[in-house]
Image 1: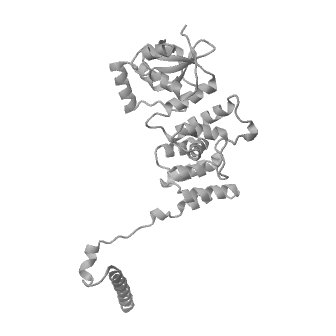
Image 2: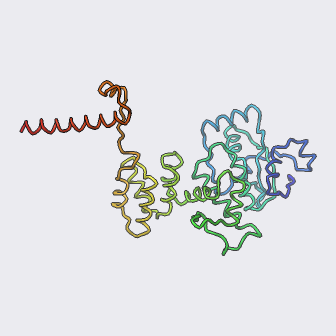
Image 3: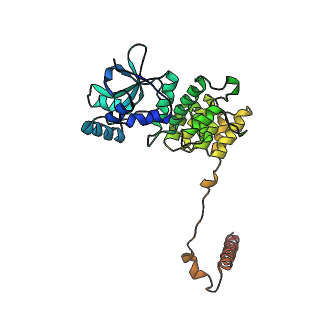
Length: 318
């Protein structure tokens, strides 16, 4: 049976994955083992989607040509099987290629320690959907809070809590320490986990911005689905200001579909038509010696004169 090691959760543990066999021997680390794919289970509630996209095709080509360069990380389960921590895409690519085994390092960690490693190791992905990132951050935050020596429940703020008071707890700070996102941004990502799937998808596709989505995450499922229905009808998404007003109406107990419709039907500032004129088109009608400000006054007066002319024409036609 492969020898396992007790893993320190510091960054050194992740660096060890990229050592070659000689370096691992010098550091008295266990070797890499080829484990049957049939004995490796996916991590429960794994937050990152594994897609059969162009990146997966490129990964398959790389594995086909050079094999799995960076070993996956797994933990041994009580039933004797293995649980994937880092390497779900490599596992999927290997299965599609018809391979029977996967190069893995077996580590001895608890479930909560595995969650932390799983999230940290996947944070290096080039593209992560916002809702996937939110699910991952939420899993890691909850795991950190359960680790021995963490603050008591009385000192821990709920997941997705606001930062209006400007304070963070130790779990929030630890989560932000190893992330490129600030603690406030991390909490915004976590709020996405409270959206119905349709709204999450709008955010993931870039159709809805993060800030209005966060406001909508405080609504109940029925109200969120009213918003989804309205979006489907109009193909228009609520602005941040509209989302704030919908949330306020909801918290005041004044929300229903008609209220959602009325708020979302209002014209957004960026939807108001803007008229632009090329100065070259106006230049032939403006005296050459006029300054820009004087030229603008000239155009306004000309339009006023023309409006009076049209009014007079209509009166004469009666």
